[in-house]
Amino acid sequence: MSRGAFTLVEVVVATALMILALAAFVGVFVMAKKSAAISENRMEAVHNARYAMEQLLTCRYVDAALTTGAHTTDLAGVRYGVAVVSNSLYTVKNIAVTSTWVNPTANITSIFVLTGSMSSELHQ
Image 1 (spheres, rainbow, N blue to C red):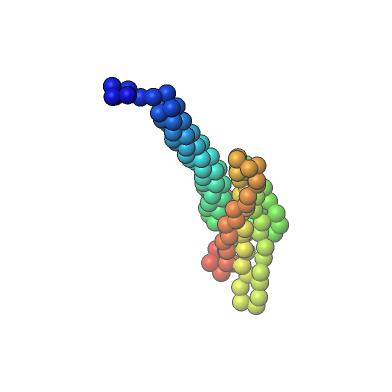
Image 2: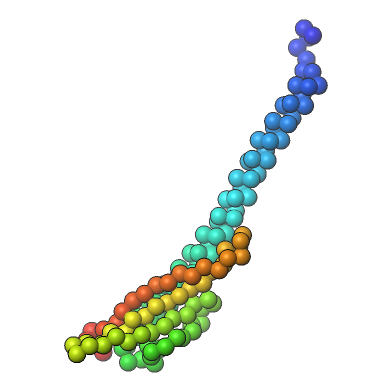
């Protein structure tokens, strides 16, 4: 026992501890990959909604793209709706752009909504 060698029990315990540490380390990378996929899908949805809203806000107030009702866009998962609110002084078109995205780890569909307004007084 005085030769400084490891016993079989010590080697087995050390190997088990290394396997546990390695499993935890791999688990962290798996969770990071899932989180990155979720963030990527969410950011794509936000980008698409912003792009669609920018395109709509460059339209003239009387353009066909801004007619009342629900509309689709060329972007996947992006739709928008226009509602008109008016009183004796002005008329406003409220625009709501919705962009859907899927959480790939849980197959849950989420919706991102972006809203804007366009006044008849300012946008002729």
